[in-house]
Amino acid sequence: MTSTADAARPPGRPRSVRADEAIVEATLDLLAEGSTIETISVEAIAARAGVGKATIYRRWPGKDALLRDALRRLKGDPPQPSGGSVREDLITLVSAIGHNVDPRAAQIMPCLVPEMKRSPEQYAFYQSIVEPRRAAMREVLRRGVREGELRADIDIEVTMAMLTGPMLIQRVLNWNPDLDEATLPEKVVDGVLAGIRAR
Amino acid sequence: MTSTADAARPPGRPRSVRADEAIVEATLDLLAEGSTIETISVEAIAARAGVGKATIYRRWPGKDALLRDALRRLKGDPPQPSGGSVREDLITLVSAIGHNVDPRAAQIMPCLVPEMKRSPEQYAFYQSIVEPRRAAMREVLRRGVREGELRADIDIEVTMAMLTGPMLIQRVLNWNPDLDEATLPEKVVDGVLAGIRAR
Image (cartoon, rainbow over all chains, first blue to last red; front, side, top):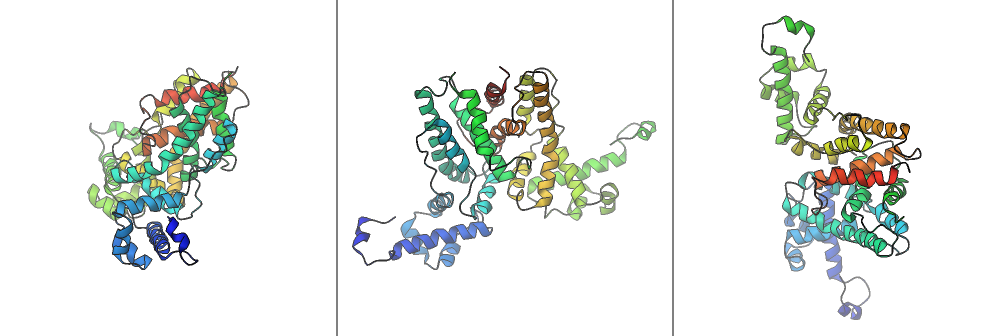
């Protein structure tokens, strides 16, 4: 969020950036504490952040845009595959699925689940987070096909679901208590690759 | 829930079975309308069912036992694989994952998700529903190994996660709007089998 003009200012984070961060942090704290995407208000966020509402509206056109940024901040940047083998890149991506650096994510992300089919706005938020991650996985698989490491006839979207599904259900639901989450990414990738490698 | 003594009674459902059903239906209706497993009360269920609380406590030792039965009723009986090919049996089981005959399930089941990691009671309810389904899938895979259709060295629990995960995330979250849910069970089963069939 810094611009080149900031380089000429005195040292220390510019006040506008500190306000942005305080607003996003306040948003995430309130969501983690039990506000929902519907019930959270710009008023409450402003109060928690110690800023005026006008400060928020100068930066974000509305609550939805702020929530979208806050959720993106919560999940962090998508992992960057190194571009090595398909196996290594898939393990990098699969290991990150459902993995949360920010502890508030464990409170916030599962609460989106009941809303996915009943709130188009919340579905759009969720898709805005996961589509870039799907795109990264899609590109690894397409590269594998192009370079002859994977069969040309694979169904890439179904393959992505087979790579993603196990990690999500295990990390969000603890679906099967007998599964070892630490070794699951590697085992899922190897299990999927066994069916899609070129012969 | 009928006993042999019921056969000697006049025709028509015995009053006790009607009360049981009314109680379970009231429970599911209240959950679908927004009560949570924590907030729902035996008082409210009794009032909705038109019975006294004593009627409920004669049949169930407490709220938890009633909720367990109600959730089992909601999800229905696990599908019965025909015992034909591994592929057919897996398609039968995978097609049922996240599939709900009772429309109230679409309201109730996703609301369990945020509770899985914070409520041991709700986690136990959920496991009581899914463990029989996992057991059925485990048996199909073990039979496939015994009969030489599947490789002996496959990781059965990971294979089950690869079969279950895609259907759950697609049906509960609509994870990838570009996936066709109708053909997904067959595609997932074929994708997994490609990696585990005996050579």
